[in-house]
Image (cartoon, rainbow, N blue to C red; front, side, top):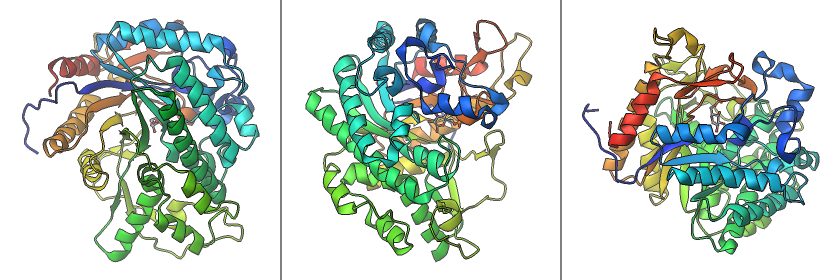
Length: 470
Ligand code: BG6
């Protein structure tokens, strides 16, 4: 691609994504009237699962003013948070007034700096009482989620510009039921499919509540659209990539956008005896909304390269030990690929362009933005310069390349209207804890008061936003 100055459209949304469980103080002591979440419970019972046995040491709950000022100093015009369900409605019935006050304070603080507030209602965490009733496998959880959503709309509706039901619902299924990385750390394919249906339903019910609330702001969904790229043009590789797309994004995108669970995925699962017998697809399809989301958030880090299976998959009797990546397609390692070795993710910026063009072509160019993109790096202290600042040139390069491809897509008519990085201050990354750091701002956990220090990328992004160009 030609290397030149590129200006972004006026009003382009610049900012960052964060989430409650990764930043608020969710530690062993539940401050502010919050109830226990699946993460706290899992860490309490099995700390060895977590890198260096570390749990979230974030202190946003007490230092939100300072952190929002940092966002303002970076010239952000928008910022994404998630609300903790366990904080707002700790027992599922009573609203926690301390939580209402806390989130109102946070959102009002953003207003002071003209920062638009985007709120996600669920970012990989839910209260333990939800887990105890069967989590996302239980249809009732979808109804409870709708109730919780309506409380959030009522309490914060006037302070939030964009609402999102879920961040990466596929990540919930993969993490909780298929690949053993989120509590309850199960390997059970069919449970994952039940959860997929109930998450889709929870999204639809939440959107319904939003429309009922009469708010004139927008409601959307955030998906991790890895985009399955086939190894070759052979029929079997292309077929494998189409199946990967069904599992990766169409299961949510098509259901939320066209109001119907994709037939191809349903047929495929029924054919292999992988459909949960308790789920009647016609009943669910009746409950999904024909009404479309107002916008789509695209989280993109890495492409999903796939090839057809080079072995015959074995389906166990109960069909529990099945995963998409072992029974439907295999991951393909492209020779010479560029890697983020710390996270094990390929770096391939052009895919962000391909995703945006597919949204344009296949989903009526729905209003969208890049809701996450970023680079997690281990041991960043080794890049500290003489002035004490981490010289994260790799992060600047990563962002610049992705932004160039975003600009290319916009020039070809993509509706993409923003770019949020994951994330502006280093934070806790689930079972990877503090292994990989993503921020423009270093969070120095070796200091007693968790000092925040700018990295080189902070001044770069500040300037890009100021100029609205790269
Ligand atoms: C996204 C999630 O999938 O990736 C974030 O929405 C997460 O919560 C981010 O932190 C980076 O991944 P990780 O596992 O390295 O933290």
